[in-house]
Amino acid sequence: MAAAKPQVGARRDAVHTNTGLASERVRVRMVERLRELGVRDARVLAAMEAIQRHLFVDPALASRAYEDTALPIGFGQTISRPYIVARTFEVLLEGVAAPKSAKVLEIGTGCGYAAAVLAKIFGSVISVERIRPLHEKARENLRPLRLAHVRLVFADGAAGVAAQAPYDAIVAAAAGERVPPAWVEQLKPGGRIVAPFGAAEQRLTLITKDDGGRVARRAIEVVRFVPLKSGTA
Image 1 (cartoon, rainbow, N blue to C red):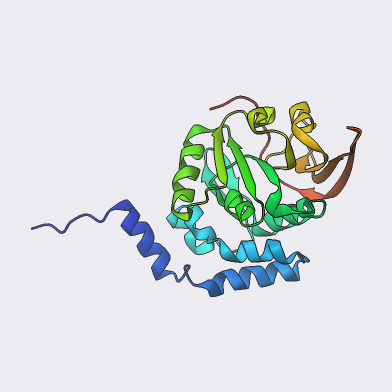
Image 2 (cartoon, rainbow, N blue to C red; image 1 turned 120 degrees about the vertical axis):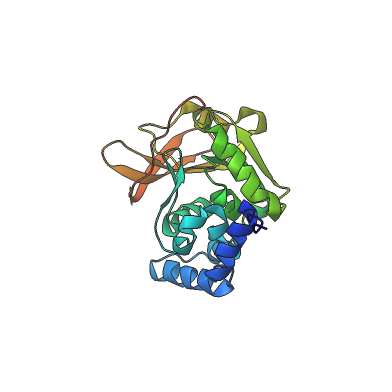
């Protein structure tokens, strides 16, 4: 009698167990590297240590999950390298006085990893994805974590999510050439956007909105992201 074929989920769990990726030590080492690269915010580092990144990537790439590198997640998209995630959230937090009472909008859910990290830091997370299979995959990845304060939305991220606005902060995982007006409109006075902008050369950029609605921007560092696209797929 032929042996029963293992289920996909069981095979995935086996891959993770056999490579020791569920061990807290691998996440601690990743966080130590982030500190060496200059990330200092303890809240960001604690959140990165708490979330198991290997659960958000394909099992074939799980052994590389804690390397400081971006990895493909399908549909021409990637999970950002840990340093970029940490640095982006560190800049985002600099202007948020009470993160646990704040609402943040994430543009580009991808596999759901960044939303999970954000959920460890902020009181409410709205994450929008324009590619339906990724939206569904992120929902599947996040379900076991039972993060009641994370809401996933399938929509055009360039348009934001007006129904849940205004936001204390907005973060994007795709690079546009200019700031979508909807993002500024949906940002609270005193809020901030951290996102990559540029064509040939992209820069992670901080955009702030004062109480009078005036917008200022400051380039943080050179980065490389997938392009921001409009519409849904």
